[in-house]
Amino acid sequence: MGEGGVLNSGVSAVPPLELQQQGKRKSNTYSMVSAILASTVSILLGYDTGVMSGAAIFIKEDLKMSDPQIEILVGIINICSLLGSAFAGRISDWIGRRYTIVFASVIFFAGAIFMGLAPNFGWLLVGRIVAGIGVGFALMIAPVYTAEIAPATARGFLTSFPEVFINSGVLLGYVSNIAFAGLPANLSWRLMLGVGGIPSLLLAFGILVMPESPRWLVLQGQLGKARQVLIKTCDSKEEAELRLAEIKTAVGISKNIVDDVVTVPKRNNGEGVWKELLRPTPSVRRVLIISVSLFFFAQASGIDALVLYSPRIFQQAGIKKKSDMLGATVAVGICKTMFVLVATFLVDRIGRRPLLLTSVGGVIVCLLGLASALMVVDHSEKPPMWAIVLCVAMTLLFVASFSIGFGPIPWVYGSEILPVRLRAQGVSIGVAANRLMSGLLGMTFLSLYKALTIEGTFFMFAGITAGAWMFFYASLPETRGKTLEEMEGLFSTSMFKWKKSMKKDNDVAENQN
Image: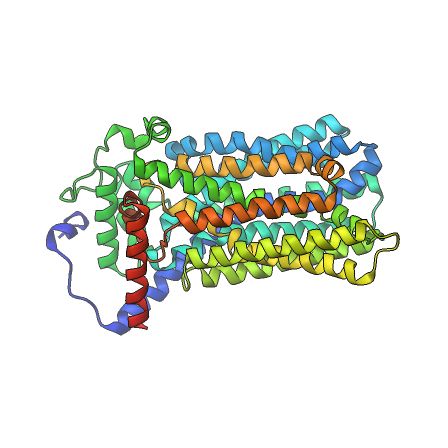
């Protein structure tokens, strides 16, 4: 019997437990390698965000820039990433998820070259704009590809990888600040920004060994190729056939069709998707509101303001030496990276919802603590040492609390709850909200804290985050263990029904344990 006849033959007998476990180890390894390769593109944003916090000190010294010019340079990359995210969804539906990742790497490489060779503010701004477009492509496509390649049992773990690499990039950017800080000012910042192009070029070649997303292949009618990828990435061949049947149903292809190549309904090639997103059904509207809110509030908590301006914040906290400020900044990067790694192991074990609510609660407490400590420093002629230590401690705890849930979970939720036909463009809307908020904070933070005081600004972030916690508590269902094709049914129920369903699922899980 040919490959295309598997569905007609029914599901074969379940193999022995030992063979299932061997297959599971093999497939999960393949899924993990593919997810890691796809997620490494997110390191580009992290590096460019982290390195700019220290590079700005030397750029200001070398090119004699004002604070408003520094704000523009810091924030413009996130504003311009909106353009990349807006086009990335449609382009990924056209050329595929994998080649869109390659495209993102090439664009970012060009931006890094522009920045490293920039003779003045204008050319530096051009480089940041080009790099921002590449970042927008990368942020949209990495979680989409990972969610579509991952089996349901490991999807939360794998789709949190983009946040892991964003944080790893931030840390590398901070380390780059330290490594090149001893050079003359006119050379140090150029190397800090320019070396970011090297990994992007390597990524463009490394990603070519990855398989294409099976859901994108089905959208193109390439069922035979999709089956081959699913067999490699699922825990068993039987699961692969079941997943293929679910995807076919989700995109409007009959389960009974067993050809390797079929004609797909026209709307699945990306046409009409924006119309469906702008005039959504109740379930799609609810998914969009949740997805966009997660991405928006993650940035509205003030995390990127802290990452981008951590040397300034530590200076306001009473740390005066440049080496001490950069050292404390590296500690922030280490803390973020460590705790987002912890989150990858917890998201599939304790679930998205409890991890997110705990994380957001911790962020609120830390923001209040940081604001209070900064208020003591700001109103003291000679800041007490305990207040300075508390500022640093609350900053580290803030990034730890954020990274353990608030950072990675929007990418997990956003990439898994949207229907397959809307996923690429739908995620691009959430990413656009995330980058817009990040860009606005980056371009206004210095002016904001001068107007509200540094402590007033962080009290404001705490209030916004408290509102986010209440919204998440009222509106987010648990999606752990659900297949991507089950999500639409989950969100088509009312809030009260999914809460009852969630309680029932939790009771069943407790009984099994």
